[in-house]
Length: 79
Image (tube, rainbow, N blue to C red; front, side):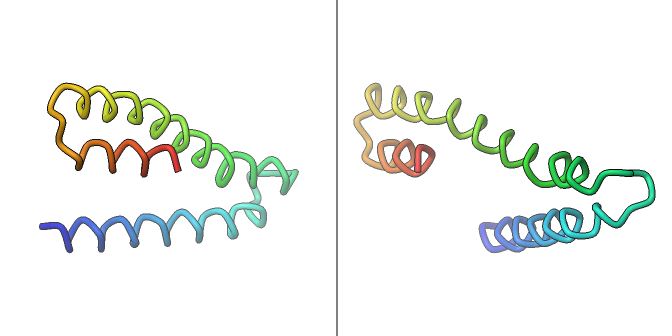
C-alpha cells in the first residue's frame, strides 16, 4: 500500500511539473508569468500552508501519546 501511494505521489508531481512548464504556452493566458503563478506558485503555497497546519497537530499528538513517531512527523512537516 505504501509503495502504491509513493507511485501515485510521483505521478501527480510529474503531472504538476508538466502543467507548470506547459501552461505559459497555453492560448488561454496572454501573460506567461500569470500562468506560472497559477500553475506553479499557488500549489506550492497551498502545500506549505497544509504542512504548517499539520505540524502543530502532530506536535499535540506527540505530547498526548509520547510516541517518537509524532515528533518526527512534526519536524518533517516544518522542514
